[in-house]
Image 1 (spheres, one colour):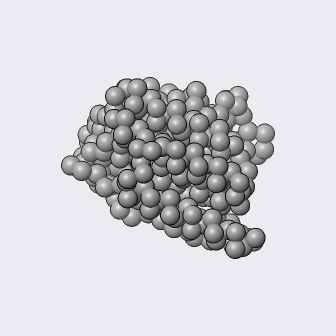
Image 2 (cartoon, helix red, strand yellow; image 1 turned 120 degrees about the vertical axis):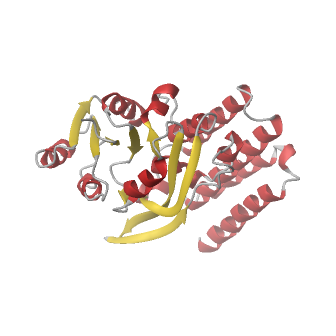
Length: 308
């Protein structure tokens, strides 16, 4: 008999964190699930670690594929998942023990309902675990979001879709993750779901999102990521999900958020260049909520200057 829930994990060279993540999943109070781990061509001991769990718990399934990046690995896993509902977790994140149980209580056996939760950021510093701020999905009106609602969330809230418990049928209808985009595949899929799905939100942080030390200092080039985000935003306008004014506001917000990340990297030059690029969007100059976002970025800039 197929399990009720499939937990899908894409992993790449995750040997340092994956054991703790799997342990937290196998400790869920809701037990009718399978864990599908898609190894995206790891060269470390990820396979051996997952195999050690699979030998003692038949709910754990291991799949290996040649490295093709996270979206492709997740799509491969979706082909294998047999549960009525699917939820995503990265190989370094954690859940509270009752996450699945709490979400299943709200599901009501429906095919168009997605249940989201809040999440808390954490990171390791000098061998110690440091807990950061918690973020929550934006309020849903009558269990619905608009495309513009999702376009306006902060970049650190994009991970919200990873908290979701989602009917597998939704993934099937939407074709899974877009393997062509460079970043924010979760965000793009969330934008697709708002057109046809309803949402319920558990306003508690039931997921713990690991932020690595290199997150603000290396990794994907921010400018390349910004261009990918902007392409996603322009597509919403091309498909007539947002107006020209909403297009301008969404571009403005994405550039301001990128500006803030440059500041975290202590890259004042690129931060100010991105801020200037934002201010060229004249349609947004009269919007108070957007200027509040700008003022926060400027405050951070002065703080960074004082620190140097």
